[in-house]
Each structure stands twice: as structure tokens, then as C-alpha cells.
Image (cartoon, rainbow, N blue to C red; front, side):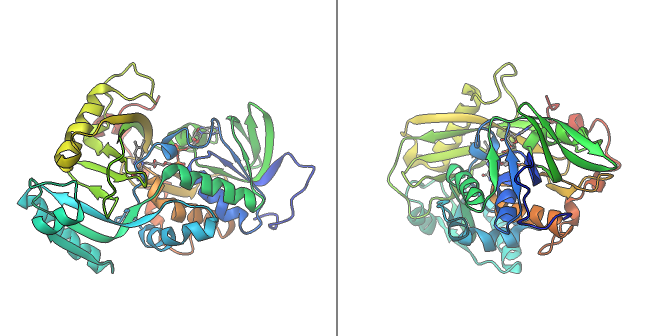
Length: 389
Ligand SMILES: Cc1cc2nc3c(=O)[nH]c(=O)nc-3n(C[C@H](O)[C@H](O)[C@H](O)COP(=O)(O)OP(=O)(O)OC[C@H]3O[C@@H](n4cnc5c(N)ncnc54)[C@H](O)[C@@H]3O)c2cc1C
């Protein structure tokens, strides 16, 4: 840091740290910085929660990530750290519908326990007891005493309110349109509401991170994918709200609604002319059919809501959290479709990169941008992703 935390110049328009993007990544980073007295300003083009951060499945189980240990450590603490409820519930059950799936779960159990997390393999009877909406098509399940889920809207509000409680600022409806550089350093951002100066810039704009980073000559390879969620009417609460399987992820809300979305097989655009946020009947139908197989005793439940959201995807599916090459005071962060669950840890990692210049609690070298140095220009087509619009 060039200026010490807590030395805000009241005449200045801007902040020590300006963060572009009021999704979970930007707001979590804002929270971690503000709680140490850093003068931070989050600029959000729309309203908080408009994009993927307010439209996701709320899953918090990313055991392949180097941030996983910190994700798991922090989630149970977040309500106290933020001072606002996230509705976080630990634990998750994944149902199986074939012996082949059960064999995969047995392997996953070994892997999870190697990382120090406790899990159980469930037989049909146990699975149906723990998941009352399941039926006899369930061969068994995998009960992991880690991971879990939280309420995306509550969590986003928690980050935003907590950041403001610590003196951070949030400006909604303020779109960043340009970035000013002087002598190899960013000095501030142009927006549709004027110029905001900064000593450090964090670009955490979801799929738009590529577009913003390009303004400072930084190439962030990203492809966008459109994913949908459906929500049923409320059903009696199950003992565990996080039940996955049959190609679906989701949760039962505290009110009893089942909120479910599909994996990559359900992400591709099926109605190209449709506005990005609007759901489509073919995808909703696919998710609803899968849900009726996953939880047959909920098959009668009416769908009362649905929506679509845009996910950001890197070529290898891993996040980017790195300093922008060639510009000293910029951190670029985009989470590649796993950003909600990782957000307590990703925000802390961004705080570390801004203040300490390195992540102090995990080895995030696999999140560096230089891993894409030899990327084929047509990687999106090769991987079947849509071009970023
Ligand atoms: C349907 C769906 C289900 C998902 N399920 C899960 C799940 O269960 N678990 C999980 O971990 N992840 C899930 N994800 C992925 C997760 O939601 C994202 O990885 C995460 O929300 C990314 O957060 P973000 O803050 O980086 O980006 P975003 O949420 O995209 O936020 C970026 C923000 O930047 C703003 N912005 C863009 N350009 C500008 C600009 N020029 N100026 C100012 N602001 C700008 C945008 O308006 C936006 O609000 C899901 C995503 C979707 C769509």
C-alpha cells in the first residue's frame, strides 16, 4: 500500500482501493479490506445481486480448489464476522442412481478423508431416511460433513452492509467505462458518474473482467455461459437442505422451496435471441425432469420461479486471482463459476494481494494469469464455449 489504512483524504473523489464489481468477489474483498480500516470504494454498474452472485445455487463445496480449506474454515464464521446472516448450513448429501456412481463416491470419500474431512457412504435405506423427498430409485448416497450452502442474496447483503459498517463505500448504478494509467500505475477509473481516483484497483467484474482488464492491456481469457435455476413451491423441510445428484446442484431454502440448477450439460444457450437473464422453457424443462428423478416425492411441486445468469469461465476452469502484468497496482479476480462458495476466501486472498502483495494463507500460484501464455486463440471453440459478447 502506498498510503496507510485509515488516512482517507476527505476532499478526494475516489478511495485508496477502488473495486470494480459489486458481486460476491468484489464485495467480499471490500469487506476484508474495510474491516482493517482501508478506504475502499466498490463501483457496481447495476444493482448488487443483479448478476451471477445473486442468481446462483448457493453451493459452498469446492474441494479441488487451493482456497478450499479457507473456504471451509471461514463459512461457519461468516455470520459472526459480517454481523449479518448468510443462512449457511454445512453438510451436503449427493444421491446415487447407479452402482457406478456409488463406486465414484467411494473414491471421493478416500480423497475427502485424505484432506481431513469426514464423510459417509449411505445405503438406500439410510439415503431415503436422510432425504425424505427421495424414493426407491435411489441406490444410495454420499454424505459429506463439509461443504454446504448459503443464501446468495443474504450473503451479498451481508458483505455489502458489513463493508459499509467498517467505513467502506458502495456506489450502485455506476459503470466503469475507462481506466487511467500514468507511469505504469493506475490512477483511477472513468465512470458514467465521473472520475474516481485510487491508489489500487481491483477488477472483479465477473464475465466483464476480460473487457475491463483489456483496457490496461491485460488479457484475461474468459468465456461466458448461461445457466438457469428453477424454484418450486415450499415443501416440508428435509433434515439436510443440500441434496445434489442426477446432474443437479441446489438446496432447499429455509422456507422449504427447492432451488435447483444444472451442471455444464444444462449451461449451453438453447434460445440464442433471448435476453441473458431470462430463462428458457427447454432448459427449465430439463432441470425440472432431472429434479423429479432426484427427488421423486417432490415431482408434483409447481415451479414458482426461474431465472438465468451468466457465468464466467476460464479455459482450465480455475479462478484468476493475480496482479495484472505490467501494471503495478491492479489485482484481477474472476472465479470461473465457483465464485459464490469460494467468496469468503477469495475476498481474503484479494485483500492479501493488495496489502501484502501475496496470498498469506494458501498457495494460489495456479490462479496466475501466466498459465495462459501459450493459449490457442480458438480455445473457446475448441472447448465448446460461446464467444463472449
Ligand atoms: C445459475 C448459476 C448457478 C451458480 N451456482 C453456483 C454455486 O452453487 N456455487 C458457486 O460457488 N458458484 C455458483 N455459480 C457461479 C457464481 O455465481 C459466480 O462464480 C460468482 O457469483 C461470481 O461472482 P463475481 O462477483 O466474481 O461476478 P458477478 O456476480 O458477475 O459480479 C460482477 C459484477 O460486476 C459488475 N460489473 C461488470 N462490469 C462493470 C463495469 N464496467 N463497471 C462496474 N461494474 C461492473 C456486474 O454488474 C456484476 O454485478 C453459479 C452461477 C450461476 C449463473
